[in-house]
Length: 209
Image 1 (cartoon, rainbow, N blue to C red):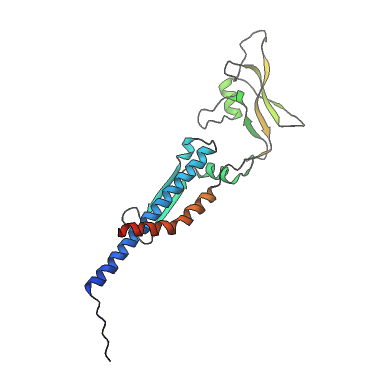
Image 2: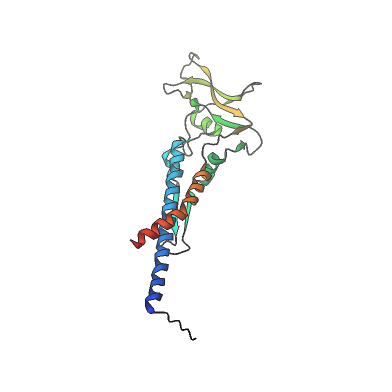
């Protein structure tokens, strides 16, 4: 008995078409998974009250950037990784020099660049000296001898007699602070990963229709 196998051109073309369909399905699935994860992370950040600006720092990119591939991948990342990671892990923060962390009160106002003002910047801008007040219970303080203006900010007193002058707490001083964990990025990442097989199948079937 003699057997002969002929590979017809139509079979080769069908296999090539199937590969192309797979490339399209995998690439589309990774794009959908990446975009979905980006949206989920942005939603977590705004839901935690961390602001739209930080949420918009979450970006996504599908690879290859052009064309389609069975090895397509998606990358989702924050452009402010230190800030996002801090809210995701809830770390214990200590002062770099081993002394105090200065936490601004409402009376301190905002800084010119980062938003949070430092004791040195506050003194330069207000023209007042800060005084250290140690407390056995609760955080120690940096206070200024001045007044609260109509916006609740600590400023220099205009009175020559000292009338209305008061001691205004400007900074709370603590040795360390535990940042609360406000995000769970791994949860959404796991959901996105679990969705990939179903997205591939759905896109492959859709490509056949």
